[in-house]
Length: 340
Image 1 (tube, rainbow, N blue to C red):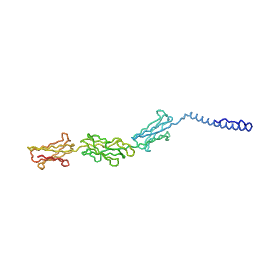
Image 2: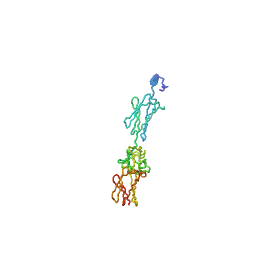
Image 3: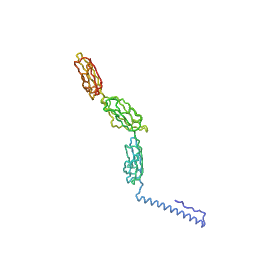
Image 4: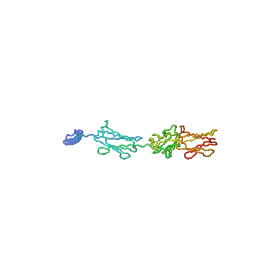
């Protein structure tokens, strides 16, 4: 508001009266102009109210990602209620993946936000929000750093069933790790405490695993739990291992012994005993008298400690030095005994 004009009290002449009139006129003109501006603003406000117009919704979005690739994005309306659908769009490393509509209530009400949960995506995950006209009004991104992955499988060339120890496995991490030791391995299927040797190939990614102490017919399985090792570059722990074939059955090789006796009536007995694993192929016994070959025959014994682990050869009426020689399926002599 303009201040009221002040007329100098000492002006009594016509000249002074003329100056006072001019001053008052100028003040009134400015007052009228100000009044017209105020009326125009009031008219605009009344027109806006009459048309039913209101403040627009204000959308924000914020996102996070943990070390297991679980992302969460919260879309929030901090303005008035939405009257038309907006759209969220999901991107991974700037590549569009999918989208969906949403409609939120006014700020401070239960429906003023929506949470998007994304699992298993790595890299830069971004959510963009677009209004009904396709204009982007908000966006947020979260970086999901991938933990090291690891596979464990029986080693190349490892027989299954195995008939020799150690049993070999190979673990391969997706990137160099530290802190991985034999004690981190989870080994099942063994009655004995496993005897484990873990060897780094030199790249801190590929490790060979040798397991001893396995009993006959045991099935050895090896896994690596989550966080057994940590990535060299960022310290993140590994995911739990995955495998195509991480089990091996151990079939202990047979171990054959033979012992013989002969009485005064020329009755000889030779006991062939298996003190190892069950035989899967025939071996052969050969009978000699005074180093002269007489006859032979096949045999197949069960594992040590079972009823079929021993076979007895009985020879009557032969004198001199009687010998029984045991040969494997490849013809190699593995045991012998003599009785006189």
